[in-house]
Amino acid sequence: MPILSVSIVARYPHDATAFTEGLLWHDGALYESTGKEGQSDVRRVTLLDGRIVARRRIDPAQFGEGLGLWKNELISLTWHDGIAHRWDARTLKPTGTNRYAGEGWGLTSDKDGLIQSDGSASLILRDPRTLAERRRIGVTIDGRPLTQLNELEYVDGAILANVWQTGYLVRIAPGTGRVTAIIDLRPLVAEIGARDRDAVLNGIAWDAAKKRLFVTGKLWPTLFEIRING
Image (cartoon, rainbow, N blue to C red; front, side, top):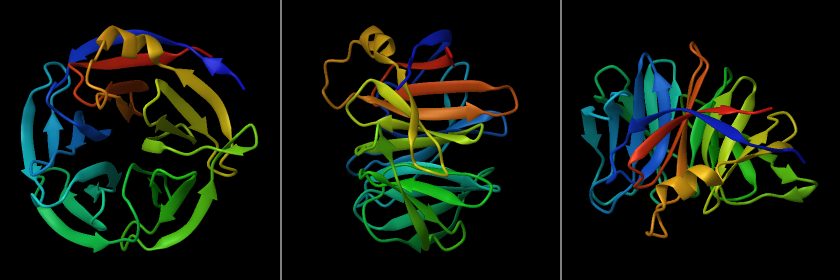
């Protein structure tokens, strides 16, 4: 199994109070979902200075989780409530909700629909309009199930996933669920030097137009633009 290093292309400010659950790039801006008891939100953020230019809070009784995009609509998950919130990507106005079974962790999309993680060794493919489950893909590394898959991002035909409480991303082949590479971000974790055990690596965004890859973590003061070596 190849273990790939990364090069840091740039560093940008990131809200150090943001408990980052989901991250994506759309139409020239970063979008982020955060989880915090009573204060979870979805926000649009300026890359260069990390400034929050728009935000919407979710129900204080819900804990916000992963964030995905379908056409011009954002979809944000909740951890235990089984509710997905939908938002207009331009205005962040709420456009509706969907129900789903199980825990919500990470979310991304390909051309066919939504791809969700729930902390297990499976990725759940969901209908982008109803969130109905279509099928599951078992994720394996060297033939063994890989659990704790968290934030997701679809990048050039592969799925990148944070492995919760580690300093690694994995690259997953969508057709088979097989991990094709491990991406070592431990130098970034070491640079942040977080003392809070919850301040883990989490958050992946891909700017497809400019081929830029961004990563950050929960309660991290820095957002990194990186290049994968190999």
